Length: 135
Image 1: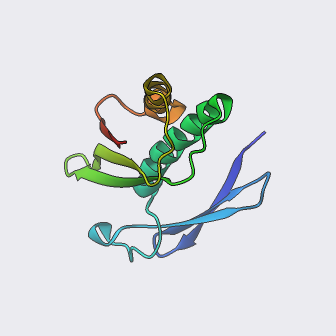
Image 2 (image 1 turned 45 degrees about the vertical axis):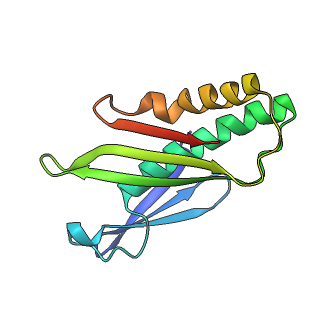
C-alpha cells in the first residue's frame, strides 16, 4: 500500500500527501533552478529528512534512557554540485539549550544513534554528511 500520494500543481510546484494522516507538503523549485523558492525544494526535504531522522532516532534512545531532549535543535545546510546538479554535502549542527546533566556514555549513545539513522544510511555515499554535535 502506498504511503504518499502526490501531484504536480504547475509552475514547478508539487504537492505530496501522507495518506495515513492527510498532512500535505508543498515543494517549489529553488530560485537558482527556475523556481520561486516559496517552499521547500525536493532537495531541501532530503536534508530535512536527514536531520529529522537523526533527532527522531536520538529521541527513541532518549526515551529509553530517561533523557529529556527538550531544547535540542539543529541547523542544516545543503550544498549543491553543478554537474550533475545534485546534493554534494549536508551539514547538520546539533545544539542543546539547557541540556540536562547526562552521563558521557549516554551522550555517546545519542550521537551513535543519530549517525546510524535510516536516512543517513540510505543516502548515496557520494553525499558528504558533516555532522557536528555542539553539546
